Length: 491
Image (cartoon, rainbow, N blue to C red; front, side, top):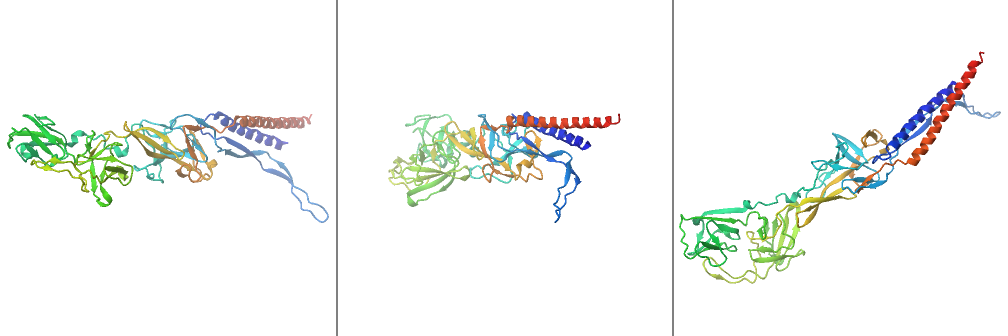
């Protein structure tokens, strides 16, 4: 009789535990990424009143006689099934479709979560807004080829307005390109009013202090300038002396461009290739504005072509690693026009251009502003792709890739609160890599995963648990009544 009391007590206690689990499930019905738990019961030890006997030729065998001593909790399992999706429209919200977890750094501890309602802090770091834990991932290189390191995940940091790495030198300061000739003696006097200097060939924006630049024949106090051949022309009555103060400002074409139309390019490498009618190759640090005309020797125009082998008067652009661009020129049979040199001799027009590239006078249009991050998106493999614009054109660049972890036994993870899990001896080590690979979940952006709690199931379990609790309490009541009858025998 006493055994029935203690068996019923074990039923009461363990049904209470099951009710606690059901209550926790219902409490988290709207918790993003929550995984419900389930309680399984198991029998307790049994008291053997008579052991089993084997059959004999004369008599059959008998079964053991046992009295159960109650029940216990067999297991409390986490049910890691997929939760429903909720569309949020927020770019940093993500949900995992399939098996896997987001990886976060929570104050130095690596934790895992299914709740992908992420945001960014003031530094642009991708975080869990509730705890400040930092989302982990892999940063892409400047050339959009492969992540820097797959093995070690790190913080993901980006924000609107970030400058594209290859445009870090923009804007190019105009003042960096100005040179000054302080005295008329620095010029070579080739005739009574014509002066030249090696640095003036292909120069831009030339001015002289105290004088006015004109396009025609200069008069007193005026000058004209031929940038193609670097010739400064003064009025016929100009009488320079070695001590005559004269300050000439100009843009040296061998330096960086100024950001204006037809500005000199940054020339890094020149590799003339006269074979196959290809004029030559020039490697520059930034490309011309799309569709811009590129000038060689200041007057010979080349137009853009998408072909790998540019023809007469054409050029093509190829993107190189390290943020460089390769401009290849085709042969230009138009040659160069006739002109008068510094000594007054007329040079006839050249109808066939020599296969060479004049690196001191290549110019073209470009945008003197960096491409800055204006928007971004996250694809199903977790790659964050940024859209960078300089106000006129846009380019895309891969910023980082979200890390996803998978486990041999994800139900063996330990729930540590805050929607976070940590590894245990039975969960297995985390396999961290790209989403959608090696069995890992894929990522759905602009959505979050809801709780997988089903209220109809929970309320049904609640009714069953309540009835089990009531039945066990009734066993205690009846056992108490029997004990009372036994005590009353003394009367």
